[in-house]
Amino acid sequence: MARTYGSGVYAIYYHGDHPAYAAVSGTETPIYVGKADPKSADARTSREQGPQLYSRLVDHRRMIKTVGGYAADQGLPHSLKVDDFTCHRLVCATNAQLVAERHLIRTFRPIWNNEMGICWGISKHGDAATTRANKRSPWDVMHPGRNWAMAESLEDKMSPDVITTRIAEHFAANPPHRSRARIVRGFLSDFAQNAAMTPSEVVDDDDAVAATVSGELPPTE
Image 1 (cartoon, rainbow, N blue to C red):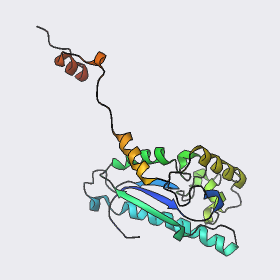
Image 2 (image 1 turned 180 degrees about the horizontal axis):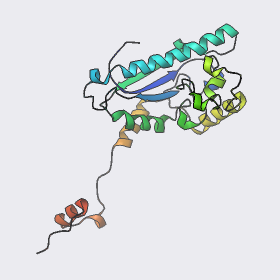
Image 3 (image 1 turned 30 degrees about the vertical axis):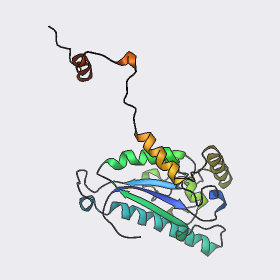
Image 4 (image 1 turned 180 degrees about the vertical axis):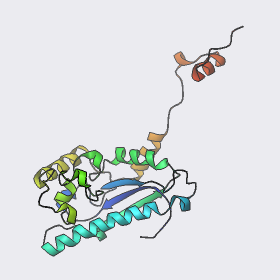
């Protein structure tokens, strides 16, 4: 993965053989999408934003390597492998990543995103001392191996069977996208707005319209 500057959004795609993700494997629907905020809130160039996207993706890769290595060492079936993942990233103007991430989540409903409430947790880095009572995330239940998530004192947020059932239900209700062209058309349609007014909405007095928009009273004779 090439090291680059810039903040923005990214999408991670799965191409492996894990049975829980069979429906999404090799499709145009990412398994996870996210954003990377710039180092400076007023950054104007990708260099000023810093290597944020790159760093975020490297962190995800490290997590996948960790749990994949643990699964291989323990002889667990269907381990995650870095080679089974690809990603797309887009460097955005500062703050554009906020809207872009929301739109990607709304469009693709990625199974690893917190918003789906099913298999979240890849982005966790352990809990602070004040929140150690938190339960083991579904992602760590499905993919054990991160040391801090292996503590015996932690309870599973959900059982593996419940998680896999909810994943299957999710894909049944939200079939993964398989046509990139259709996705592009959908994006264009979502961002386009019909600005035309119906005949009943047309007002001949332009000054009155402008005054309504600005909150001012229209001029009187």
